[in-house]
Length: 393
Image 1: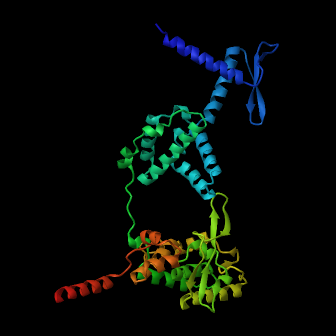
Image 2: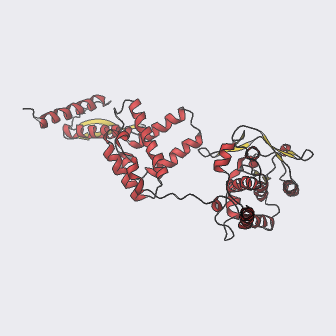
Image 3: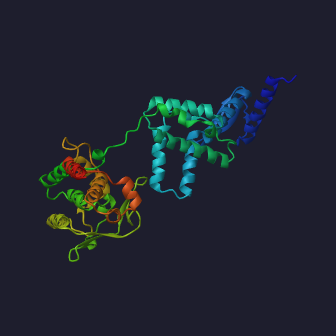
């Protein structure tokens, strides 16, 4: 008969021998009968001594086992996976998102320190249960988290750390009922109504701060539907008052990893033109007047005492100005952008023209930026006309 306990003991002894072979420092007995060695301590080394040799060896093995465990911990393997994403060309903002999502999903849980070799499908299921008990997470976010885990294990397979991906045996949809229910936002939450547009324009006009340059960027967004990065990157040379055109050719990019701002092409790398209306001209002339008065004038349309106004400042201004009872909820520059498009579409502008002015494809514009923003009086007139036609028939 095979003695299982004996076999396990032999395996453990062999592992101990392998660890001792990798120990880079000698083990010696000093003249006082103590057994000595060194262990790494940062960039230096620390001397360890014990009266009993086995006690010293146990310390050595425990130290190197912890090091091996750290190198294969889920936390470490996640960092290795992120490094691979960086080498594969992922942007700094995407890398920043991966890092933030680690804090969101994994940080504070014991899985961080767990040796990846010890993580199986059952362990992952228990982790997901703990996560959903700890936080309210929509299923869409849970799938994103699971995608990260899958990537970590696939990278570990490539590195020959593990042979099998435990994520393959996890039935993720069975956790859907534990997730936070996602509610689709209504048109009133994603756009501005007529009363909200009027309220915002009034706030921007009557705040008693004519030298506050940022507010003019929000007002221009209401007339043009420009992206916030395009507003921040707009130059005076892009404004043609004689031809009555605004040329959109640049956009500001914010690197959240380094917190640096750069000027690049537009989101789709295409240049587009917007007709310069009287309302837009009025905003731009007021901007120039304020900047000349305060000495802020530069090549950039929106500049203040700190230099070029960044997109984040413009976004914050829009949200702050709509954080009151006149508004259904706080509105972003993106909500303003959706409103401009929806207003055009509800007034009969073709999908091709509307998409062109916003800098979208028709498909994206229709699916993500078009909402019914018509008021009830308009709907009543439409229904009344239909009813009249029905009676005639």
